[in-house]
Structures are given as structure tokens and as C-alpha cells.
Length: 288
Image (cartoon, rainbow, N blue to C red):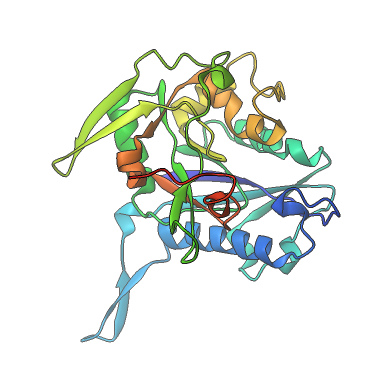
């Protein structure tokens, strides 16, 4: 397969520092983006081998699951850390713009549309998301084969830490129904059930479709790009960042996630512990 991944990347220190991209220390952002890029190449790139000890030779490995990757990092107004990244420059291409930082996700949409017809998957990630599952795209493809292109599976975003009350937390739990009611009807086809490796699995309409990312096959990308609202830069879902990542796909597709009982089926790591650290403070811990 040919896969196009766009990453919205921004860093500019600010006294307010509300977002991780505005903190004074650039190292966490550098670490997050470096891990994201490295993981994408290691999991889905073709440069994978297995060492045959008897022959002292390295032979290709995982080739049926490897793909042609193009990664485009979208930045704005020269506020980025690409010149400090400790990864090979051929891992990605740089797309520079002058848009407002909070609207970078829409620039990624423009890049994706400009490449219609050239790829099998069209993807967007915020720059602090890391995939660890080499079967990620296999699972996505299985889902659309079963459910159809009008249904989109989103990963469950999580944070991890060996410290604190909880070691792993999924951070995009249910929103109040009214938050997305104007954009989606979650009563329509509420569940989808399947079986994988003799294990039943349930997919449910997402009351919170946000994951800071999306992964569309070629048919889905073409369908979205053909909508009159595509690239209208509507920011009415929570805020600009959330809208750029989620509003368009929520309007276009029935969005599903796996239920909390099977949240790990399709997941993506959110770097840091900004949400995880809320448990025990602003977020209570429910009794089992």
C-alpha cells in the first residue's frame, strides 16, 4: 500500500503555556515527534530485516505488512523544531505555511486533497501521537471491509505512566450527547459487532469521536473531499484544534470506537501525562 501521513507540528514558547506546543522546554515536544516518526518507519516502512544467525545474513522481514510511506510535516510561520530533530531528514517532507497555528490541521487537509488518487490511505496526526501496533492498518482495512466506507473506525487515545493511581488511561471518554448532536446522530447504527481470532469485539458509535488523528482509505478521502463543507475551516466543535482533527470526519462518516472493554483493539499513544495526571484530582477514580 501507499500511505500518506500528514502531521501538524507547531512549537513556540509562551508565558501562558496552555498547550504543550507553548511550553518553554522544547525537549518533550522533540521527543514526542521523534518517537512518532521513528515508530511510523519501524512499523510500516520497508526497511525491516531478520538476522539469520547460521548464515550471518539479514533477510527482509514483514514485507507483506510493509508499505510505501510519505510523511509530510506541516508547519507555520517558522515556529517548529524540525532543525533539532534527531531523525534522518529523509523520514519526512516539510510543508511550510503562514496560517494561524490553531488552524494547521486544515493545512494538512489541503495537502491530503492535493494528493487524491495517489495513495491507498490518507492520514492526519497531531505531533504528539505515537502508534505502537504493526497491525494498525490491517485492522482498519478489516473494519471497512466488514462495515463499509461510510463507517470510520477511530483509535482510542491513551497515556501511560508507572506513577500515580492509574498506569494507563484512555483520555477521550464520552462527551455529553449535546456536544456532538449537531454534527452526528449516534442513534443511527449504534453498534457493529465482529469476531477476530475467535474473539467477539464490539464497536460503538463514538460520543467522543476525537482522537487527534484520522486514517481514511482512498474512497473515504475522496468522499470527504467532495463535501461542500470540506476545508471550510469551521471551528465549532470544542475549538480549532479539535475541529480540524475531527469535525469534518464526524460530519461525513459514522464514527466508531471499540467499547471500553476492548479499548486496546485500536489505540494510539498520546505523549505525556497531561490527562492521566488529572485522575485522583480533578477526575475522580470510580470504584470497581
